[in-house]
Amino acid sequence: MKSKEQDGERAVSPFLRWAGGKSWLLPQLSVLLIDLEFKDYYEPFLGSGTAFFALKGSHKSFLSDMNEDLILTYQAIKDSPEQVYKALRRLKNTEEEYYRIRSMNCRRTATKAARFIYLNQTSYNGLYRVNSKGEYNVPYGFRKSLKFDRSRLERASNFLVKQNAVLSHQDFEDALASVGCEDFVFLDPPYTVSKDDENGFIAYNEKIFSLDDQKRLRRCIDIIKEKKAYYLLTNAHHPTILSIFGNSGTCIEVHRQSCIGGKNARRGLVREYVFTNIPMKRNAQKEVAYA
Image (cartoon, rainbow, N blue to C red; front, side):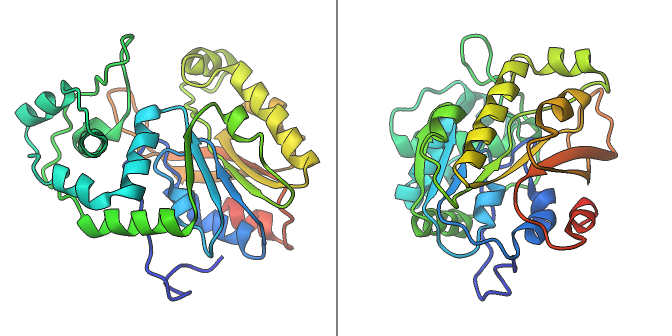
């Protein structure tokens, strides 16, 4: 998979920050997808869409997420990026403004999208978190430099149109029901490992993406394979995950730098798993692990 610059295309960057985003994985994806020809593209855990925006060529793309506000924002960027930008440029990066915007209930789609992008860009670490009432409650991030890039929104909009993006707010199992032969599915479920033991993993993730959800995802992968479609799954480097997905295809251990801060964060080299049924050229596994 050549870069967009090599193919004469201008790179499209995600317009959102996202905890657990996969920009670090793009070199590995380049190795895995270099010779892969596929039909439609599916991404049911959309987030910032890093893998989607790195696609080469044109594919009908089915993008979904359980975060309804996220999907609304993508739809607004696809349909009316100029209106979203006009709403954004009126907002200031101050602590007072942040909490005012955070408490707002917007009516218009463009202003809802602008609020989502604004909070994403000015909040602490770009996190998305809601309380028991469904209210966004991430504190102000004190980012000194912030500029809303009009051209980035326009390029994202054009790319969504080019890829015939179909956006939906739904569970991943429903989103994957229409996968067909030779389609490609990129799976990046929510995961965070707090301790290197099974109980720590399950307890920490139960409300984010439960063990039962992981098992449902494995069943979806089995169906994807039965349909002769391709998949690539990123997941936590943990014995529980290996026991669920270990025989679903090729398993590769990859390494990345931790990029999430916090009071108890441990920055440094982090191991993760990649599982896939994409045919690999000789020595590709080693290239992926250390790309």
